[in-house]
Amino acid sequence: MPRIVYVNGRYLPHRYASVHIEDRGFQFADGVYEVIAITNGKLVDIEPHLDRLNRSMGELNIDLPVPRRAFGFILREVIRRNRVTNGSIYLQITRGVAARDFTYPEGLRPSLVIYTKSTKKASIETASQGHAVVSQPDIRWARCDIKTISLLPSVLAKRAATEEGVADAWFVNEESIVTEGTSSNAWIVTTTKELITRQTDNFILSGITRQTILKLASDAGLTITERPFSLKEAMQATEAFTSSSTALVKPVIKINGVQIGDGQAGRVTRQLIEHYLNYMDNSF
Ligand code: PDD
Image (cartoon, rainbow, N blue to C red; front, side):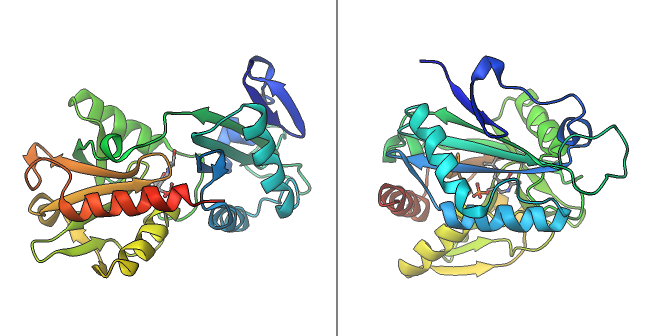
């Protein structure tokens, strides 16, 4: 069965799916994207993802390529045609095609590309496997709240992590504050069992998984504080984890070579993994 990709109104076999060389996404990273988890064939948190997409596009003044209500239909159709049960769907919108010029003309037709990735369904066991991270300077711009396809700092930071033999990096700003992961939000649990994640502003992406975890944690009666935390505090935390639509709730068991807690997913992290997997299972 060939993989099917949606490109500007057409469902095409993966190898024929392409965009124009003067697409502004290709030349200027002038576009936005979303990644949405799929569980049991269903989209997880579709409405908040579409809300964030809408916001990102508004901030960049890019028009909707199709009406909002059509997104749900197209996303589900791509999932259906690719027979995806578990995995994720990637959706990218760029400003469209125009002769290369930093200034863009009015009235461009935005490009829309959507495709899926199948993965094994996460279990408590697989989701509880931790990974190590290293810190990397946060060299990104001051609008990290917009989910743009301009991801070079994350590419370079992940590459640096790989060269150090670890899975990922956490960005740290000039004040030694952890902002977020290269493609995830960052969390710690303090010795007093307080769950901490940085408040949202223009220096991090407001993760949809983050929002859901905040709600699940609050429902579970955990003490939560949204505030900045330093790299030093993170390295002294009893637990740490990242959250994203692809990593879900992922334990961080080492930061810059220093073991966190007992080097395994901690109690609070495990509890949140369980709640989040249940939540995903009940998506519709
Ligand atoms: N990344 N912060 C950054 C910088 C991200 O790129 C992401 C998501 C998140 C978490 O957002 P969410 O919970 O909505 O997935 C936070 C996606 C998964 C990616 O780029 O592949």
